[in-house]
Image 1 (tube, rainbow, N blue to C red):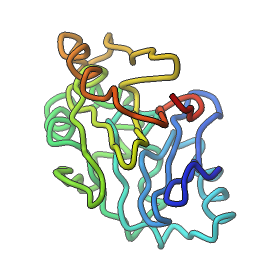
Image 2 (image 1 turned 135 degrees about the vertical axis):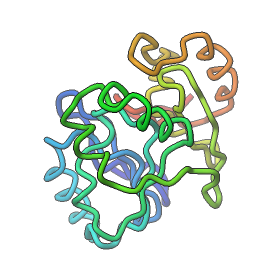
Image 3 (image 1 turned 90 degrees about the vertical axis):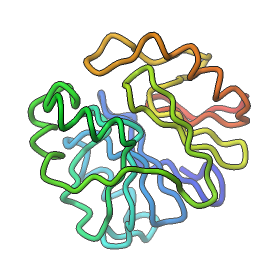
Length: 188
């Protein structure tokens, strides 16, 4: 589904999987769950995008419902916040919430995301210590920091930073379109 000329929703809405967003037909934001990898590939194909076209995969955080099956994107570089990478190294499967997701993600090289051209990378600790949101032209890709109806993400999972959620939510108030990690994109 097209959100803007540069942003498409290409995954989500199936079970506990996260939404997946495609930017400029070459960057994926999150991957959903591994169980939904084939549906993601089918949705990309409908947009004439092959797995080899994907240059970057950016994780808003590294919970199992966002990390999917990285092996499907052989030419991609993978990115997460420095804090998510540190927590993955320190806490292992607790950082991803499930051992199977940890097994899938621990074998890839995760690069720290410091910037993304044309986007404001916003560090929003709360749901996880290393959660990030991405904003461009009033469109906020919020991961699990914020959902529709101003509902904040859970702060009771391993690696959460509940004491920081309120200040993180303050950072992301100025959006026009909200594209959360779960649910539908909505206008303010």
